[in-house]
Amino acid sequence: MKRFLVCFLIFAVCVSSFAAGSKDTAGKGRLFGFTAMDLTNPPLVTLRDSVQKAVEARGDRLISVDGYLDQTRQNNGIEDMITQGIEVLFLNPVDSQSVQPALEACKAAGIKVVVVDSGVARSDLTASFVSSDSIQAGKLSGQAIIDALPNGGKLALIENPLAESIVSRVKGLESALQGSKVTIVERKSISRMEQALPTAEDILQAHPDLDAFWGLNDDVSLIIQGAVESSGAANRVKVFSIDGTPSGKRSVARGGLYAVVAQSDIRMGATAAEVAYKILAGEKVDAAYLIETKLIDRKNIGQFDVDAWE
Image (cartoon, rainbow, N blue to C red; front, side, top):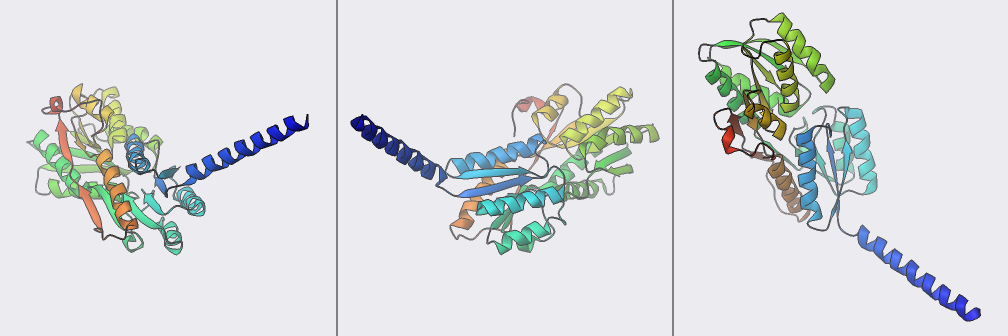
C-alpha cells in the first residue's frame, strides 16, 4: 500500500510539473492588443485576422477588444489590455478625438500604438499610422460618379464625421467633384448601423429626383441599395461605395451597387504587424503608410474574385 502511495505521489508530481511547463510555454512570446471601432464590421474583422495571423506566425499572441462604436467602452477595453501587459496596441478608434485618454494611458505605460485604417487627432501620441489611402479612395469614387453622370446630377451622402477614415474619404470625394456638374444636394451623418436605413429612406423621400447615392462603406451602401430598390428607383439612382468587401463586389456583379472602391484589409493588417515588429526592434518607421485603393465597377468586375477579400 505504501509503495502504491509513493508511486502515486511521484506520478502526481510529474503531471503537475508537466502542466506547469505547458502553461509557461503557452505564456511565452510577446503580447499585442487590437481594438476596432466595430468588430461586427466585416472589413475590420478581416483586418484583425490579418494582424493576428502575422503575430501568431512569429509565436506571439494577440488579444482583441470590440469598440462597439462607443469610445468610452473602447477606452476601458484599452485600459484592460494595458493591465494584461500588451507591448503594442493596434488601434482603430471609434472617435479620433475622444480616444486621447487611452492614448495617454498607453504612453504612460510605455506601450507603442500603431493606428490602423482610421486616424487619431493626436498623432504625436502614436508610433505610426497604417491605412488605405482614404483620400485617394474618395477621389476614385468621385470620378466614378462623374463618369456615370456625364450630364451632371444630384448626389446624396451618408457619412460619419467621428471616423477620420470616413472624413478623408469624403474630402477626396468632394475634391474630385469640384468643377463637375454633379451637385451634393443632401448629406446626413450617422454613427450607428441601425440609423442607415431610416436615413436612406428619408433622403429618397425628400429627393425624388436624386441621381446618385454614396455610402460611407459597403455595409451602409448595401442598405442604401436595398432602400433604393424598395422605393422603385433602382433604374434611376446609382449607389456608390468604398470598401470592396465580397458582399459589395457580389452586388456590383449582379447589377446592384454601381461601383465600389476596394481597399486591402489583409495587406493593411500585414503591414501594421510588420511596422510593430520594427518598432519593437528599435528600427525607425515612417509616420504613415498609405496603401493604394482600386475602383471596381460593372465594367471590370469580371477581373476580380467576388468571394475573396482584397
